[in-house]
Length: 293
Image (cartoon, rainbow, N blue to C red; front, top):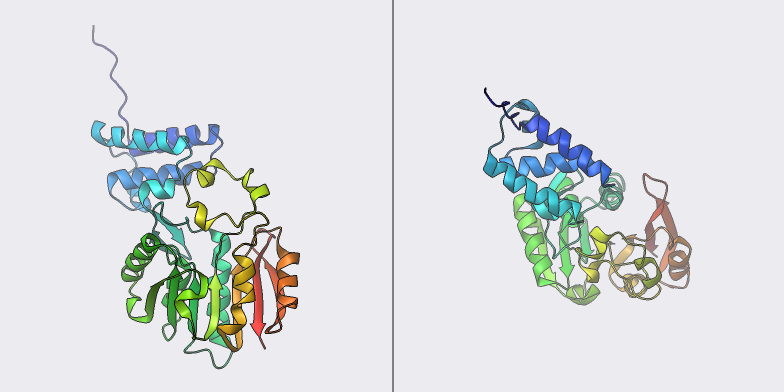
């Protein structure tokens, strides 16, 4: 009597099973995570999975995929597992030296790009990207403003290495500089049309509620902002007037709970005006905008 024929593991079957597995474990966007991991293992684009859903997956490929799935279930970020994240419709190399790019940060890029295109005098904008990390903010701006120049600063040489590779990947190295330094150390004596930053802003109290995939894997130096969350924001806002041209703008990501306090930091700064806090696509206060004047 012949034994029952073992069912073949295809891309379709693996995606369906893994998506359900991730969702049962409470992971957000379980289907997307499964697609990212499987396309990484098979060496294809995500859309390529759907062009051949009935492709049999070899035992070796399944073993590699299984390992990544287990690590993802143990809270290791999928972006680190595959070595890249998506931001502003672009792909960026990421590793544990840098933060994973997030959709809420895209509003900084969108503001700088739109302001530069529609406000006279900003065609050849010069931008300082303070705490550049993966370079996603500065590189995205450079990609969409072909006449701008970006100076990217970070205290981490490892992060700057990632940012340089991303700039090369997106063809903007000729309009970018990369400098190692803490906050404004890398741009002393210079003035810019924009100072942009996604600084560490999570307070010690809020840190307790941070999800494990952030707390255990992403760099603390790029996330934690000290006891009140303002250890970096305070000097970043306080020193901005020295590095902005007249009418230049400070564009900074903040925590949803910090809108009131950062506006007060602008109010007591004689060199800044029109401090505003804008909301992201989820309705959270996420971006501080202020002008030198």
